[in-house]
Amino acid sequence: MLSNTLLRRVEWGDCDPAGIVFNPQFFRWFDHGTTMLYEAAGWPKQQMLIRFDALGCPIVETRATFHAPCRFGDDVRITTQIVEVKARSFDIRHTLTRDDVVCVEGFETRVWTITDPERGMRAAPIPEELAARFRA
Amino acid sequence: MLSNTLLRRVEWGDCDPAGIVFNPQFFRWFDHGTTMLYEAAGWPKQQMLIRFDALGCPIVETRATFHAPCRFGDDVRITTQIVEVKARSFDIRHTLTRDDVVCVEGFETRVWTITDPERGMRAAPIPEELAARFRA
Amino acid sequence: MLSNTLLRRVEWGDCDPAGIVFNPQFFRWFDHGTTMLYEAAGWPKQQMLIRFDALGCPIVETRATFHAPCRFGDDVRITTQIVEVKARSFDIRHTLTRDDVVCVEGFETRVWTITDPERGMRAAPIPEELAARFRA
Amino acid sequence: MLSNTLLRRVEWGDCDPAGIVFNPQFFRWFDHGTTMLYEAAGWPKQQMLIRFDALGCPIVETRATFHAPCRFGDDVRITTQIVEVKARSFDIRHTLTRDDVVCVEGFETRVWTITDPERGMRAAPIPEELAARFRA
Image (cartoon, rainbow over all chains, first blue to last red; front, top):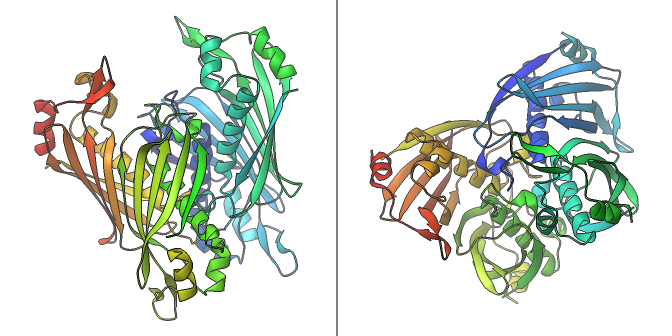
């Protein structure tokens, strides 16, 4: 399955008064991790949407477990990988580590969405060319 | 079980290039919903921590399901309620609606945490006075 | 000159490890203050852009002075007012107070922008109907 | 004068419904630019505060001019440099470019602050060892 890893320095503004990363920031980083996964698949997000005439890949479900806090100045590693490619959606896992210790795990399900003349948008089958790259 | 509701106007800066709320923002709002739930219990967060000599209530697990997008200018309603009070942790549900349509549901588990002289911090039993308010 | 005031509770996620509002948050609040000023002028932002066939009102210059820190739980008041309406731009002042003490002052210059078939976008005269409301 | 440059990819969540970077994000990036400048001076921020027994370097004034918008996926370069070192404060300039075009310029004045037993905090002379590094 396709996978990609990013490095990230925890910034002052990522942290809360307890001195640890404010949990919504992790979801920002995971979203960027997914963007970079598309790029690793061969298509930067905007190009992918144009190439396959899609509207986007909105998240329909996400969850995360927090094992250890991250602090200002920490260098963390976020590995984003495809877990499953279904007909109209795909599952992604994000694993954030610091010095090989898993601090946060995130999971998300995204739906392949196209423009619908009547309803504005609707789910559609993931193009086989893209699905093949995700499964690689 | 204790419950509290907030109203919120979706701001320009909450939204992404697709014109909908960027998903990490919901987690910011949910976090504030929990803060206001403590206040509804009778203790603003900082006072609660001092009163019960606690370090905080970090999230150990969260998840959310996204049913409908929210857009710039929407007035949304976030209801935050205690779902279960366990010995050392408690579960919270957030329900975000717009015109009585559920757009996002969030769940979180938070651990009651105190200072530990050796390990820095550790989970501890939720004080009965607070637990009673949460269950009210 | 047109003026509008908002109340805002400082949230946990607005604050940094020093326990005070992280300065970029003030610019988020000021941006929302400007949005609500348009609404006070009679047109919510999206309606204003459609009504006058405009692309937006991007900021070309902003500055702020910080007199006193704001902390988690503070209730602050943000007054946003038109300072000057020029041919193609307008100046706005934001004054953030807590208990009548001025904590932050912000200033911004925004340009009235329309679609240009060749250059994508360009500055244009502010419609007189809107300018009259701003000056009211 | 001390200077440091960072590279940054514009993320989806940095952008607003107009598809351009929401202006408060630039101030987040500038803040991180300053943090990395301290590190370039030889002291990561937390170590610098401990080493010189300081409380922080809060911003008292900031301003920015926006020359060209940045969009999702842009690779930008932020150069942060000391402009002037005064007795109790220092000025910093941030220059954000994309393909050698200046998109945003930011300026900030920060005050060297120490703990004051009576007033909580107060401005103090910048230690000469640090000032010398800033001027290098």
